Length: 281
Ligand SMILES: [Zn+2]
Image 1: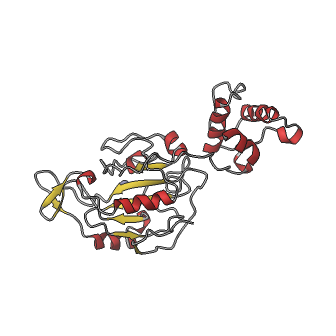
Image 2: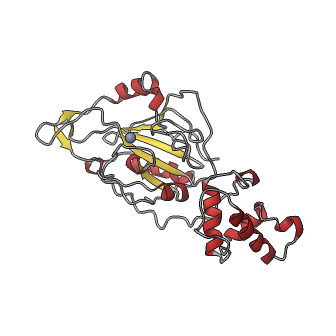
Image 3: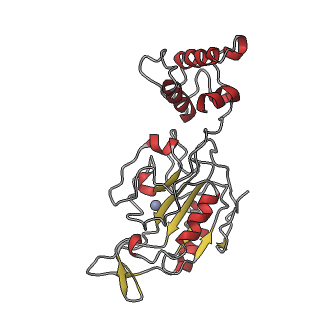
């Protein structure tokens, strides 16, 4: 297993760990702490790192990330191990469990606000900072399978959101790109150091037989339907695949299973691990 704790990070475990939804691709969510507001004409001093550590281990623990990162010094503090969810995005009832999406769902709070002042110089975006220590964080994320890509594009101050991209692609997301959330941070981020092409994603992990069947609704059903259509087994859909299980899903899966030369209970229209593997490879 890769490192649960970023090598070199100061550890402040909050306990209160909880698993992530590992059927989704691994990802990182980027934030800025935005604890003050400066302007170009009137920049404000950056907040001390230790003040934020006290916040996330005290009154702000309900919104604690995995990592607090100071892009000016490279200093990092960690509050949750990589395999737990953390708590920095809003998760409304229903829909995606936003703090848990992914084999890992690593959240990084960058110690920053627009026009913060450090050593007499003011900085408009995280992109303008020295981004010290960023390469180490990216390497750690990569060790957990997070590709270097931004599936929804590099963050801007006017982000858009796509629940579909969120549920189907691993990589880096800005807080402003997470469904169910209204924040616009982190704004422009440094360009990732080039590390060659992102690893080609393999077949998605099988979510388990219990993900499918009457009354079930989830992203795996949508993914299944989209892949059936891609493979030419979508003729029973009248509208198209959706998150809600329906008889058309069952009939399309059964067609695919019969095309494998299977019959009887092997072609009942409910996907098992072997159906899933063959469908996606
Ligand atoms: Zn945020």
